[in-house]
Structures are given as structure tokens and as C-alpha cells.
Length: 274
Image (cartoon, rainbow, N blue to C red):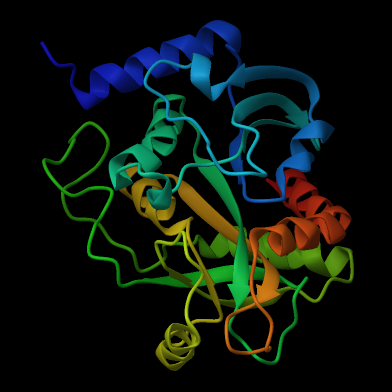
């Protein structure tokens, strides 16, 4: 007999709890080229995704594919070194499965990070952007189908998908390090191809400042569960058509490496303030 979603989630939770039983203050999802922050976690408990019952497996270069749980800036954090994407062949429901496990682990704050293409012509590659809202024109949803009432209601508010109080903490952390933290709207594209120049022009008309292939499904699932979300994009390249250069994933990883120290200082400052 096929297991229900809650049964699968409970098995995943139990596996993690056997290895780390203490309460967890927040979770952090580390995007492409940003996974090195997990190396700063003290006394880490490392769990490979492949070992967790029902967990998907990361297939993208720059995604280590493991949970790292321990202490960072005086808080207990669960870091995902790598996430899952729709373009990998996973369903939207599979993409957000770890977020739903976080809910069962009683995690109430989620910091989502990503590598994104910069649409705003006034900015530059290497900037960090606080996500204030998002645009999803993709028809599919991680909550399509029968609602799991144990996780959240069938219909739920997305007026503050990215928590205003957490945004204030990010702004304060940026001020403390004299960082010019950009603020803007992130638009989801499914990938794996980068966007066309026409799609980037459309995104700009719609009000997007950055485009990417992740984060939005996880934000939707987190809001459904009542988890507060903070989103940060590392703008790793100017989006298609802004500069007359071809885009590739290597540039994404290289830019992530270049801004690694700034990114890590910002996220650590935010975690410290929680």
C-alpha cells in the first residue's frame, strides 16, 4: 500500500532526529556556488541526501547534496548544501519536500539563497539582493493536487511571502558591514536553459530585478506550513541581452566564489540576529 505524504515526511524526520535531536533555530538553503558557508558550522553532523528516506538527490554542479547541522553564530542551524530543481526532472512537490520536513522538525525560520541573473541594468554581477517579492508565471505549483491539511490550509495568504521582520534583520546586518544590499523582485523560470533576451525584457517590464530557477516553490511551501522566509540572491551574471556575452554555469560558480566572503558575512550576521 502506497504511503501518504505525511508518512514519508515522518520517516525522513525520524531519520534526521536519530542523528541530531536538539532543537534547530533556523534552516538555510545554499544555492549554486554558495555552499561553502556550511564549512563554518561548528561540530557539524553531516547527512547525505541519498541516505535520508524519500529525499531527492542533487544532480547540479556546485550542489554537494547533504545536510549540515550544527552551530553558527551562536544558533543551531540546518544547512542544505544544494537544493532540488524542477529542471532536474523532479516534480514541484519533490522540490519542496525538504521544506515540509523542516516543518516537522519544528523549524520556523528559513533563509533561502540562490544564484540569479541580474535584470536590473543599474546593478552589476556580484551584487547581493534581498528578495522582497517574487513573480511566478509557471502554471505548476508544489501544492497542486490534494491538500495535506496537517501541513497547512488549502488556500493561504502570500501578501508577505518574504517576512518583513526578517528583511529588517537582513538590512541591519548589511548596514553593520557597510554592504550595499540591493532589494528587488525575483522571477522564476524553470530552466535548465538560461532565459532569452526577450524573456529578460519581459521580466523587466513585469517588475523583476532578477531571474532564476529556484526559491519560489520553496517559498510557497514554507508559507503554506507557516515557516517565515528570508530570500537572498547572489546576482552572478547580467541576464541575457544586457551584455553581448554568452551565459554559462561556470560563470555562476566563479561569481559565487568571488563574493563568497561578503555573502557568508551577511548570512552569518542575519543568523546571529535571530
